[in-house]
Length: 273
Image (cartoon, helix red, strand yellow):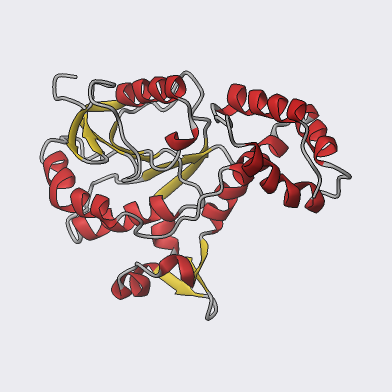
């Protein structure tokens, strides 16, 4: 196994922190392990040679690929089902009753390979059923990695990622390609718009404010100041009364933000916020 020098690790840690807000502190062994397969796949002689290539790639493509490898997090449909139950039973009835222009804005802010935003789109479709006429419920889904965004756009998934899916949803929202792979239907794919976006950008460029923001399993990679600054930006991107949803494995300390906690992992911007 090729060893990574402390100097190279520190250089990489600074690069990923400055560019993506990713905190690699005390993760040298993990980083070194994940880099082993990458530099060999890319046919570099060493980790150091591969990192030099990443640092000198002005397009940023390779750094995005590296980010994906360092933060790979297995995801699947209907992950943390309590969130979708909350949408159906609480958030959507409340929000829909107050939206006058029938424009429901939902953002999956770290969408990875697409399972989360497609699950949101299914939940919305099931909620509205035959009463969707005139409503715009398109889900915005963003990620920094071009690799996972391409996967999400292709919308082809293994059966392993669908194990939590209700059978009737598989029948309605998927096309079977083989015994091992399914693809999201064209109709549902039109309900999700994928865009490249770096959550570390100090300005959120989307014109409309959101009623619901999912930002799950991403802030675990950030240090406290980075996480706090991001939450401020996401708070400002919500309409008053909008919901902010993080992973069940994440926490926000009491008094750390202006969000009101509704239940663990689900927060709300006050009506007067």
